[in-house]
Length: 435
Image 1 (cartoon, rainbow, N blue to C red):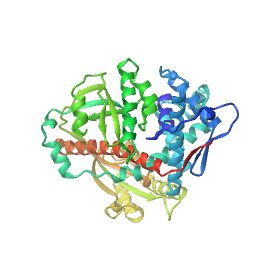
Image 2: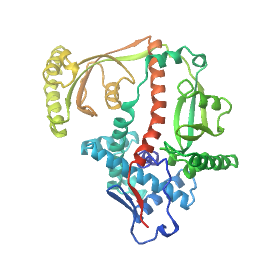
Image 3: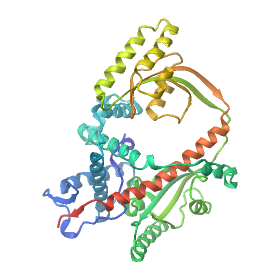
Image 4: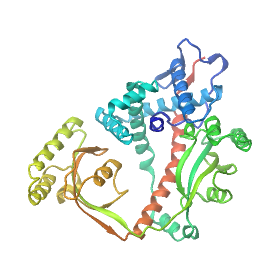
């Protein structure tokens, strides 16, 4: 449970450290310690966040000292969260109660728990259910903000894909499970500023050399978006990583770390958690799908869209005993009601593979039987029902390789752009330590 909980509380940290002076140390009297744009952070809020993180790390077997460095890292996370939430509010990015309920459903389902048993687990960990729901709300908002401001700006050209597929490194491609530490620099940092950041990077590197765990060094020094989670990046392919990083990774083995790598975003250290060679997949499953979409927006509130799609589903359920009639009825209702370009074709989306759609749609597609119509479900596009018409297995080796390469390049670009974006919104925010 705690692993999932971390996904909702460990949000991005700043590329620039905000420190607490001696006279600003937290005491038992609640007071405003930071002004962030139009919001504030109090000493009690900081204390509560520190206590929660320390407890979580202790249960993960990581001992975190209760020192100023750790307090400053936690505070920086809280500052960045307020900056992101404020920006999301300006852009009109919201999350409904339905969104939160769906997220809760996915979490409890993954843990094979009921909502009541999940609440009991939270209570055991001294976490209120309302606090947890608030964390989910904030995670949904910040993820949607990232999708809009970062992910939507990423483009991968056919030339980039072809260059990788025709390269020598592609023939010997390797996947690395990585963690990283970033000592970020300002976009227009002076030579002195970069030298200071480089000195911090050397302090982190020396701590690793002296046997301190990568997780602890990440927590202490890194300002990567996931620093408080040990800088875990997951699986990354050498074909999508920048050559300077691949070159350093090629020099080390599993459980070892690279030397300091200098990039425009700052100074980085990578650790290899695991390595695996990539096999070529010869075939892939595809799913023939129709759907009906009711969008949430100016014409429909979330509740109205949900009600409309539920009504359509009820109409189709009357034809369950006659599959031919149900199929024809689905096509007719899609043409009449679906607010998607596929509506004019009876909701036909053609043959879809895993990875072609958003996770919520894919999950429903994979869990619907051939010939059946799904229950209503929601994605970022609105409320859907889908009909799974057929499944086939086809040789898609070339297409799959291209798709995989494209996604890996996209993921790496997004990781680096995300760090730069966090740096830019931090630069543009008003942040003042209360003296």
